[in-house]
Image (cartoon, rainbow, N blue to C red; front, side, top):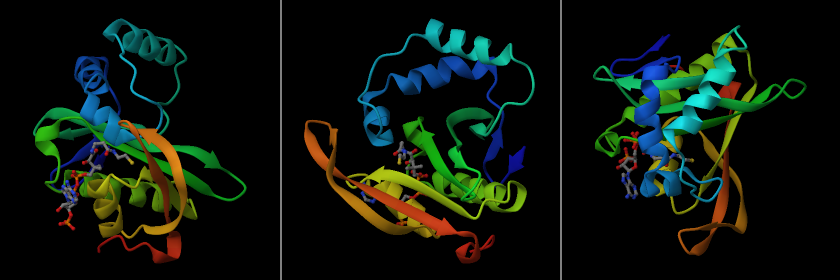
Length: 178
Ligand SMILES: CC(C)(COP(=O)(O)OP(=O)(O)OC[C@H]1O[C@@H](n2cnc3c(N)ncnc32)[C@H](O)[C@@H]1OP(=O)(O)O)[C@@H](O)C(=O)NCCC(=O)NCCS
């Protein structure tokens, strides 16, 4: 649905679930992703969740599969929307480590920002990221997001406390073509 030079953001298909399940069970990917501590996930549970959601009909919402070279390399989307403040939170996880640090994340984030500002008319997009995740922070900065603050020693990740960094971009700061 959203096409960049190398990346396509499209709806998640049932066929993507084995790949996504593999990513969800990869400790390095889970730790980089932040949020909840890593828990294993069976394909059956992931499929059950997908089927339950699909049975509702309607549209998929704002979660996308990230496709590159014809395969699903991860997922991304926006959530935690606030209609009054016109804000949403962005989340991304490239689970195929072969695709880390090659600009695929940056391209996906740019597509998501364009979607959020141009199509969904948000005023601000923000996110949270563990301070140790320098790769992610560099990619977010390259897309125009700035650090807005940090919660000190706020997360427990990989056996240590880490700061939680808050980053954001306002619509007037956003440039579609950087
Ligand atoms: C975070 C993520 C989306 C970034 O996408 P990506 O395609 O890997 O990143 P990009 O190639 O666009 O940019 C990576 C930047 O980090 C740098 N980098 C790569 N590895 C690094 C490392 N170990 N330490 C510091 N910087 C690093 C790269 O040089 C590049 O910066 P530069 O262009 O300024 O030189 C992707 O790596 C990912 O999904 N990782 C796993 C899950 C995750 O971390 N999700 C984010 C949770 S907030």
